[in-house]
Every structure is written in C-alpha cells, then in structure tokens.
Image (cartoon, rainbow, N blue to C red):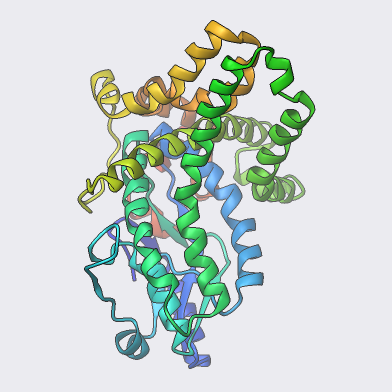
Length: 389
C-alpha cells in the first residue's frame, strides 16, 4: 500500500514480500516511514524532529505491542485474502458522533486483522520508506483535524467483541490523542481564571509542583528524540550524514523550540474542532496539498485567529491581574499566540533555502541521496548538492 506522496526502495519491497512468504500468519507488515528531504521550512523542521523521535519510539512500541502492531495506511504490505475476508468496515449510522464511512480506517483494519488471528507487525528499520509531510502549518493542521474527525469514530469499535487488550488500548490511545487537547487548553483557561480571582496568587500556585510538571512533561515528550540524539552523537558516520555535530545539535535545539510551540497550537486547533463536531459541523476528507507554497498574512489570520484568541485572552487576563503568572501560562499559550507569524515564517521559500544553505535540519538522504529519491528530483536534494559542491 502506497500513498501518492510515498516512495519505497525495491530492496525493502522485496524484503516485505519475503517476510510474508516466510510466515503465513502475518497479515500486515508496516514499514518505518520517514520524511523526504524538503525545502519547506515547516516540513524541514518538523520531519527532522520526526526523524529523531520515530526510530526510538517505533522500536519501543514494536517491542511491547508485538503482534498487535500499528498500521498507518501506507508504505506497508497486506495479505489480501484475510484482509478482504475480515477487514470489511461498516457504514456508521446511529449513535456515532461522525456518521458515514470509517475515515481513519487503517488502525481499525489492523485491529480486525489481529482479531482474525493474523499478526500485525512493524519493521522498525530506517532509511528505505519515505513520505512527504505537509509544507505549511495550515496544511499540517488540516491533516491533523482529518485524523481527529476519523479517530472520533473509534468509540464505536471500542465495544467490539473479540479484540485483543492491546488492540483496545491502541484505539483508546488514538482517541485520547485528541481528547486530551481540551484538557490542556482547559488547564490554561481555568488556571489563569483561578489565579486572576485569587486574593493572593501565591496561595493558589505552588512553584515547586509547577516547575516539576514543566520539567516532567517535556522530558516525556522528548525522550525518544534524546535517545536518538545520543545514538547519532555516538557514531561519527551518523554525525557526518546529519551535517556534522554542530549543525546536528543546533538543529535539535531548533526542533525543541518548534515542538514546544507547535504542540499547543495543535491543542487549540483540536479544541475548536471538537467543539464544532459536537455541533454537527464536520469537515470534508479532501486531498492534501504537498507542494511547497508561501502563506500570506491574510490566509494565516483567516485560519488561525481562533487559536490566537485562545492563547491571547488568558495572557491579557493575567497581565491585568497577576503578571507574575504569565511565564507559567506561556508554556501553553505561546504557541497559539504566535501561530499566525509562525505559519507565515515557516512557509517562506527564502527561509527554507537559508536553512538548506546552512545545513540546518539536514537529513542523511540529503548528504547521501538514495537512488529512489534522486529519481524524484527533490528541490531540497538539488539545492543541498549544489551547496556541498
């Protein structure tokens, strides 16, 4: 299974076939997908972070999920006979928030394949399976909200009989990926309101618990990234492929700042969208834009003003009542507050060319492009090769 924006090497394709031939009880083998080199600043920074996190995360999840592995709907091999026999999906009618055809169908198909007695495995090997990522923040949010809408249909399947415990957990986790977002935005708004109304904010806030939480949550977020960073820094050849130690470490620092801003923007977007879903307002599952393009200020304002307001209002409230609490609030509010200029800046072609020229967020496929990517004539590889000459 390949998407239109995916690529896979012949060697990996043949390896997947051989795996299926050797073990007839395997129904799906999902490959580890990594981002193609991109000239878009947004995609470039995002997929560098994705590259650092996905290898360690996937190796770990492959260990504990075992034969109940994930299926991401593309860059995977599927055994046709059990897939057609056991993975037929219903059209959802009554009692569901999002009616109609199952949208985020891939993980449901993996769950049904495992229920039928066939294994679903992930091959956690990096460097042979590629996809394009959204080139702008707006396109990234659009894709994220499509998944949010589709994952809300998973409630219907949580009650299905015969599912493995790990399969139920995967469905629940997919739901909580988005239902957790209103909790974070609620923490910002309720916490800011409580501080503003408190007679003495110091009696409401415990700085020791707050600092502990601020340290714990990012550590959990970046644990897979840190594991990969240690691995890369320990191997000279890997450091060279990523552009050298200084560029690699600098790129990781940029990624940390980027993720700290991006994740709360996602929380705000999910919160607004889930509110619309409760009112019956769904979105179309339309084609995604993968071509690099700039984002004008008017477009960014039109799409991101709700996220901006979700970040701005609590900060204004605290500025008027308890300014000392603003740094705490900014740990969540900064991303939504800066979403409009971030969308514009990270879509700038000039910024993208500058990152490539400086070797920032370079992937190994730019330093040593494989034939499958050279054949695609990717701008990022062409620019990087000219810079290295």
